[in-house]
Amino acid sequence: MTETNKAETKPEALVISGLDCFYGEVQVLYGLDLVLNKGEVLCLFGRNGAGKTTTLKAIMGLVPVRAGSIRLDGQELTGLPAHEVPKAGVAYVPQGRRLFAEMTVAENIEIGLMARGKGKATRENVLNLFPLLRQRLRQRSGTLSGGEQQMLAMARALCLEPRVLLLDEPTEGLMPSMIARIRETVAKLRGMGVSTILVEQRVDAVLSVADRVCFIENGRNRETVDVEQLRADPSAVRRYVGVG
Ligand SMILES: Nc1ncnc2c1ncn2[C@@H]1O[C@H](COP(=O)(O)OP(=O)(O)OP(=O)(O)O)[C@@H](O)[C@H]1O
Ligand SMILES: [Mg+2]
Image (cartoon, rainbow, N blue to C red; front, side):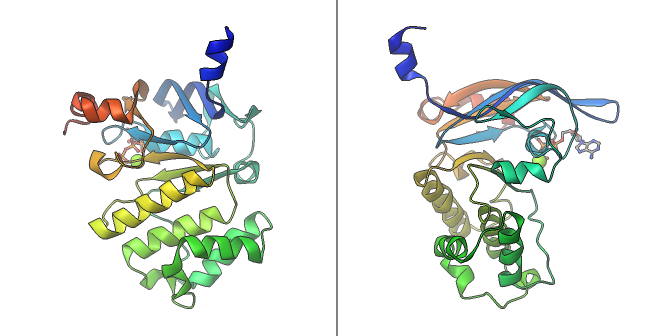
């Protein structure tokens, strides 16, 4: 590699190569390759059932990996039990936001802090990102609006102070003003050095916040393009997702 090439190479936060995943005997991911650079927002696009959620679950150790590797800053994650992955620095907000509905906002945040032994300073940082939650600390989380629940799910995940954040369709079912807030938060986190994989179905929800977009089709990674490139020529979106 020449010196010039070296200077152009961005540092990688997470590198997935040759990933094969199965549910029982049914193969869902086929040799998937994915690179998340440090401090970027990488968007995963693809039709329903393409394998986006499975990719995130594989990173978290929640589905078995039959072949391939997942490295975080060089550390192999595939051999780790699922509870070790957050400790290694990866936070996950699942599709459909799994909160403890009977618990208050404050208690949900407390659980996030306990997961990695974080304290008051982390709690303050997280609440500063979501001032709306600060006003609702005593409210039962099951009674929050959809957008507020999404914020709480993100807040709880961020209590880990992760290096890598995985967000599975965070804007699903939310109204535009909430979508804008989630987007602003993702952008703010990027400014703080967090690297994010963002799964989305709607292109307009992410073009302003993503750096690159990777298309997933039938469990395989297809093109990965810079977001400017996609703005100039959105034909790839039609090709892989079926809508422009
Ligand atoms: N627990 C499971 N058991 C068996 N098959 C599963 C399981 N979870 C997912 N699948 C299958 O794996 C494939 C990929 O699913 P996945 O949830 O990763 O898709 P996705 O891209 O996230 O879709 P969506 O956009 O609908 O969320 C689908 O065919 C799905 O039916
Ligand atoms: Mg999914």
